[in-house]
Length: 126
Figure 1 (cartoon, rainbow, N blue to C red):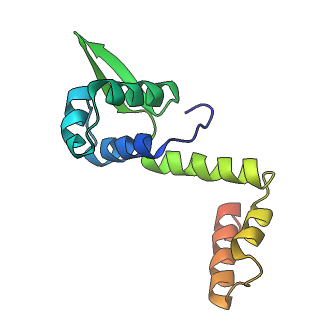
Figure 2 (tube, rainbow, N blue to C red):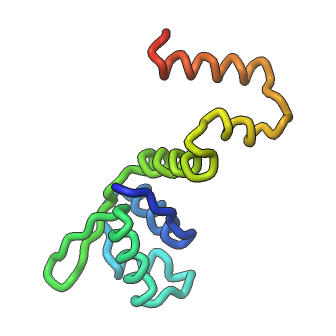
């Protein structure tokens, strides 16, 4: 995913299946998997096209079928999503994000110590 684009809830459901299965998927397979939702072929095809356009899925043409595989791992996606949240809502400031997250409730000593250790590790200060 070059530029981050949020995934809709339905797109995220499809990606969760792709990540968990670890296998290539087709429209017909996803129609089976999500049959309880009552999605039609066109609906699933639209989701897959959007996911490919957003860079979440790779698409390969095999005969008359398209085969889809994950273009990013689940961890990579969530990292991009978190970075996008901080960049777009908190002007790129992790400190502003943490201040908003805790909302004046304060941080326990254990949480502060855990954060200190994490930041030191990330900064290579250990």
